[in-house]
Amino acid sequence: MMIQEPKRCLAVKTLSVIVMVVLFVIPMMGCSSVRMTMTPRSMLEEKLLFHGLERALAGIDIESIKGKRVTLETVGLTRDDLPFVESYMRLWLLKNDVRVVQDPAESDLNLKVLLTVLAVDQSETLFGTPQMTVIGVPIPAVAIYRNVRNRGHTEILMYALDRNSETLVQEFNRGSGESRYDRYTILFVINWTSTDLDM
Image 1: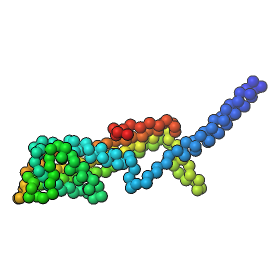
Image 2: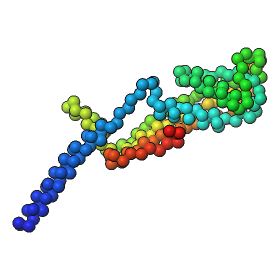
Image 3: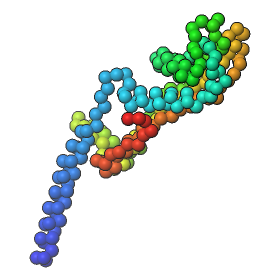
Image 4: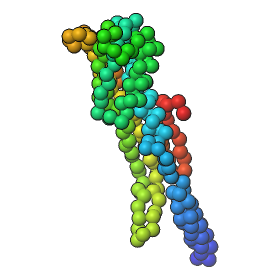
């Protein structure tokens, strides 16, 4: 009996130290997650959208209109982004030997571009306890495993119309682009990212 008592005391002391360390370290780890942005979108969202747009345009075959003059009309569901998308498309067309003109009388074709998708989706998988508030005290999330997935999606439809009759001359292949940025956390403190963006 005298031999077992010190072992039990040692086990209790060890358990007490472990509990104290966990109670001290976990809240400290939860204080490091802050999202700050001074713009309507974060840098990550803008990169996801732009790379999706870039890849969608790269997938459209415009070999048949190279060397021609076109007018450009862009419409989409996300109105705020249309000026940027149209400006980028003008440069992209110019780079591919297609001249964009303002006067329909000077054009060979009218290009109609439908921006059907331009968005970022986020989903999350968490094994652990989510962030919560108990009696007015914020308790940080405790993540045994966490995966936050961010996906940028772009889809573009493009049509060439006759400048006089507005009849359909050509329907181009659908342009579709995707970009990704994933963040992983294991055992509270082990973090890494996986992305196809140029960071």
